[in-house]
Image 1 (cartoon, rainbow, N blue to C red):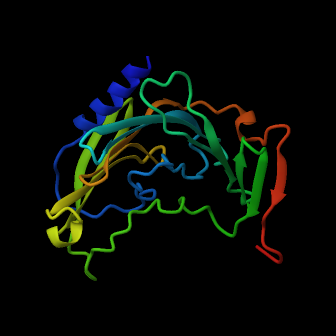
Image 2: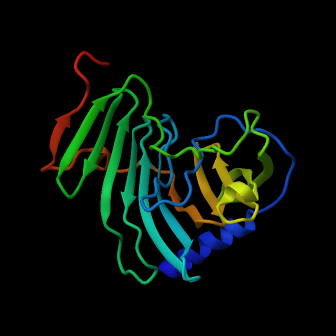
Length: 253
């Protein structure tokens, strides 16, 4: 079953690689960060009225100095209640042969009504809470930085890939290509970094993301199952045994 899900994501990412007209997209969730050891995965927007839960598969393919390729994967479970409370996970990257679910490193809860933001760490059973002035920002590094772009961003091309229907959801695709000249790429050759995003406007999340940088490899993130029913309320509660640490700065928000 695991291998069939992995094949599904890879096939889906390939099938969604189409071309379209150049256009800027608005109201998208944050851009995907690219290949990292700890991958943020899907950023769940805390909006009310669109409850769901889903399983996210992340596939990573990285070239190694000896010419071989390292393949790794992980899975994250995500959810959002009808009131907009979100649940998101960060799990360890493992080899494709790994059995069972990868180790849970941390998980995130945010309630847009109370603005209570909580990061929970299973290893220490610590729940770090902060009252925010506004909705949580994407994880650090989750918007691709383009230091090689000139002031007008002329090396960034954004292409509208049109729409596709996957698993009953209408997806709108966007491709971002960043050209890096040979003298700045570190490889002696001109390269192009490509990011494809397939957004479900209905869910306000990306169903499929694909990042490819010839220097660091390729990653595909795909929500392989979506349940539109109201998630179990227990999903959004701090588990018994966790120590709550209030980290809201004194005098704020």
